[in-house]
Image 1 (cartoon, rainbow, N blue to C red):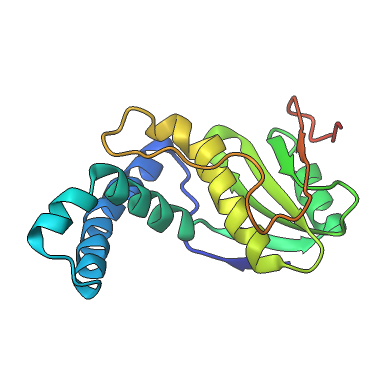
Image 2: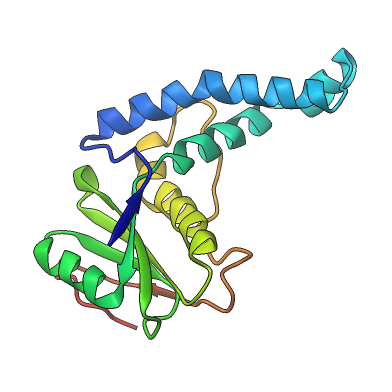
Length: 172
């Protein structure tokens, strides 16, 4: 099993703090990007909206999420050790590789399967985690943008499989 990323908030308060901390960084990134693109002040005011900065904040927050990857057996073992977690899996249950992110405060783990494109699966997983776990906690925060919660580009023909309950069992 491999892991990457640094953000794995234990509480909803930690998640909110991390999201809020990404705000000023997002503003700086957007401003400097607009400057590099040669936006004059009028174009900047016209094109750089609150939604643009909110989207940048979402991306920066999600990019820090701690993600684990391994084969199906490693993921199944993790689920067996964490039976209290609700499992939300996207992709095909017949694929041998899985990436996942767990949110202890929500007792939820989001997983995405992949065959060859691990990096694409990680990005899809991070958007899924943001939309399915963190959005609930961040809802109502000023500037929180909507995120993707369905199959994205790079996901191939992955279908979505929701897993209900807290028993960790998979349903189709």
